Image 1 (cartoon, rainbow, N blue to C red):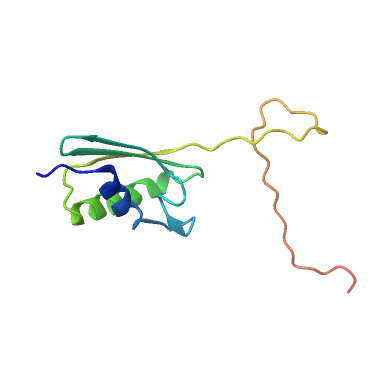
Image 2 (cartoon, rainbow, N blue to C red; image 1 turned 180 degrees about the horizontal axis):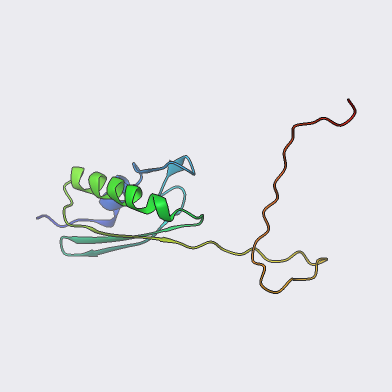
Length: 112
């Protein structure tokens, strides 16, 4: 096997689309680490949204793209890390609450 460069791996990974972000995983900054040891490649991808059910599909897509580029036996690790945002300065922080999700209907009906 020939020596693999980081640029080659990044070029192949830039062809893998994240279906939820609708952009490639390099542009989305989801690829956190690329390790190359001789001909062995390892890739660590961190998703910033809840997607445990999507990990296997994404891993399969990444492995297929790497194999199509001549890189076989790569190790791909996919993690999810949802970052809690800081509290606004004028709002008191509530213990145990990391994120707030607002839900709205937008169906109208007022004034009829």
